[in-house]
Length: 208
Image (tube, rainbow, N blue to C red):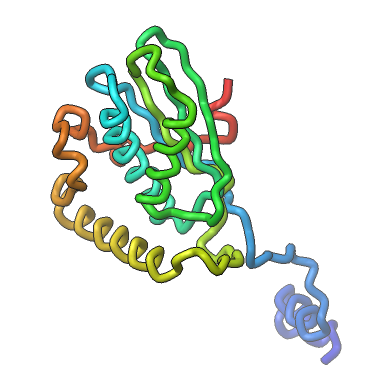
């Protein structure tokens, strides 16, 4: 049909339909492997008491990782970089990050990477006052990536299902309705509901 004829009957929509019918579309192409519209999701906390050993830090990192991973899942994102921030009781601070093999929003994976980064970069010269965890270089859930032969797809799928079940239980019955066994080792450190204080950080929040 002629574009003018369509316009006379349908107005502006006539031109749009004519353009589509003839293969003309100047709207932006949306790539399937797209990055998320925000740069990172992170959370940090000043602990109720100084952290003095690896076990203390592990508890807090898992709490923070739970909040970061849950928010990633809620928004349909995964991260390709895990970053931690650490501040000791004399206010010296540093950040370290790691590019991970597969984009993730799995709580256990984010926590494990965060703890690995910490172990590789802290020598306990001072007690720790504040810790942060951030997931960066975000991609959407439809991001495609090649899985290597040595990665356990089945194991990751089970972890994702477990995380989804925990999310639903907490949504219905509250954050403290289900807890990791690790949290019972120190009820003071694990008393914080980090997800309620969760923040989405702009790019560069942890730097400087």
